Image 1 (cartoon, rainbow, N blue to C red):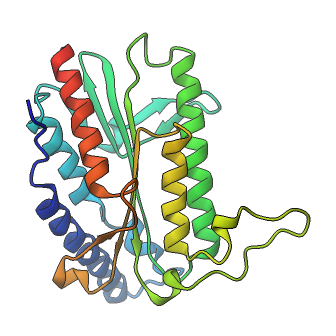
Image 2 (image 1 turned 180 degrees about the vertical axis):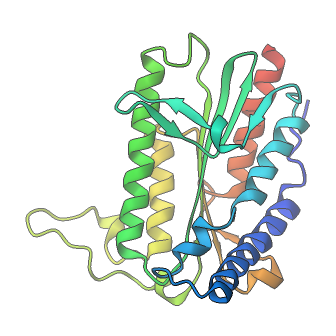
Amino acid sequence: MALDLADYQQKASDATMAFWGNRQKALEAKITAGTTDTGERGAVTAGNTMDGFAGLMIDLVEANGLGTASVHRNRSMLTLPGFFRPTKLWDVLVIQNDRLVAALEMKSHVGPSFSNNANNRAEEAIGTAHDFWTAYRDGAFGSHPKPFVGWLIMVEDTEKSRRPSTRDGSRHFPIFPEFKKASYLQRYDLLCQKLVKENLYSATCTLTSQRSAATTATFADMSELSSLKTFVTSFAGHIAAEAARS
């Protein structure tokens, strides 16, 4: 049976529009309230900017035969045990008959600052995966087939994120050549590709979008391996396999 990708392109466009719209609403609310914030952090902490993409994942679960699964998005239901720490909070969990089917992390990175935040995002993604799979190895989620573990990020497409980096250097040893003069958009794409190639995540995705997408709803991929189509196809395939096993 063919996989059902749940009209993902249209839903991703809607989610992109909502992403920027929710950010703008949060910023306007802070201005109206007379509060201040560092950069645009409040636009992230005050609104559920990635809700549209979480909704797409739920549609994919239902469309591919696992409609009876529990798909959790409420914060109180999103913790899983870790190995190096007691728990980790995820963005979406799919559980069927007490079996962990999928755990998804959804991030965003909007300017004006990209340097330190990009490094932090990479460290978080790598550490989360290592912690998760070590916990899985030690039976934290029972003796079941491997769950799907996904990481998706929306990155602002702007002059600063496209600018080749000239600050990345190492005094003692050379950095890997693919990172030399790579823009932050390219670095995120490289991160996603490497996370999959090293089997740290089942699938990853780097989406780029400009602020004008609040009205145009446009987004783009960086490469085939980190594309949204690859991500949703891999996720839908895993869900279909779980449905056949249930």
